[in-house]
Image 1 (cartoon, helix red, strand yellow):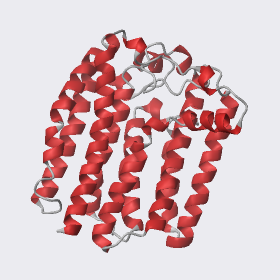
Image 2 (cartoon, one colour):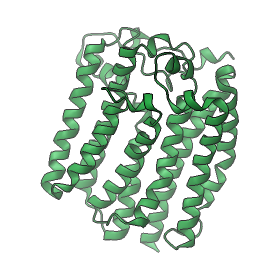
Image 3 (tube, one colour):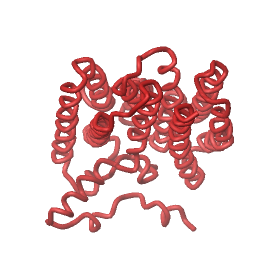
Length: 326
């Protein structure tokens, strides 16, 4: 079956047409690229599990506020990334994208939402995140502002402004921090955990897995990104170098979890999951070497990477629940 019949290269405008409130909400919701929300939801859950282990209880209200704030920043970052890529022309010339995983939401290019409407949506989502942050500030004090401001800055500067971290080859690191270390440590701290070496180590595998998501998603976009000055790591490293870095990220996650297990920070079976998915990571790394010549293999590799992140976060959360119970 041709790949295009499985993964259409664009959203279909007719599916989002209509003047009703429900159709408008559908447009706004899908413009945020919700398929990637697990990358922000799951780290908060995992960090909360660590915090619950340390504190011996869960503050559900704080957890919900943290979750909504993090997802709002993530959604805003996705939307503003589309705005930034449209401004420099990246998405306009991207003919090798694998929709819906790479090349943005395509909402601007397909006329579903204008660039100015997308920009207003992104700013509105940031306002929502700030309001949620203020609620956390009332409950937990000014220290929470450091987490919030850092997350917003990394999300926005990834693709907008004079800095454009994605063009400097450090966007992947920024995203790994914004959707790994920050939400995990922040969620744990909100539940009463100290930000110590153990917690930072616990957050590193999640940072590696989310970094791998961005890295592999940038592979089909190499030509368009490079042609518009968006010099991501895949643009700089090429397919072979990106493949090696991708596998190193997964191997590093395993090493950190294995070390934490030896130090009795995690249960004895904790390394099984990251060890078990190394074969998937190896296959995905091989797909990266081939680039978009084999779109089916590239699509499967992207989906495997998303699955590894989801499974990994749930596994680490389960490890902490195990320690709570036993």
